[in-house]
Length: 79
Image (cartoon, rainbow, N blue to C red):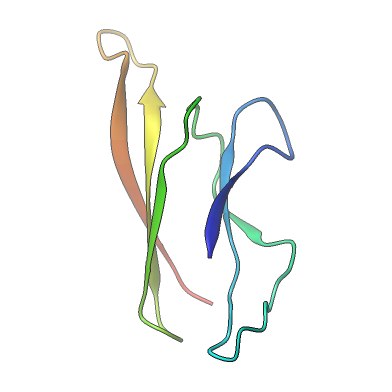
């Protein structure tokens, strides 16, 4: 499972947790996958290969000069 989390500052981070096939949440507080995504309306999607790697896709506001737009980013992680 993955979600937007505002626990550290005014910008959201992407947090995730592992859930077993029996529905047990392994890390209830989750862990940070992406820090400071700088987005006001978070969009997050997660794909998982079971006990293997997972891939989270999220939107991020690009603050670089001449950009000023949302970008789609992705990050692989594994447990």
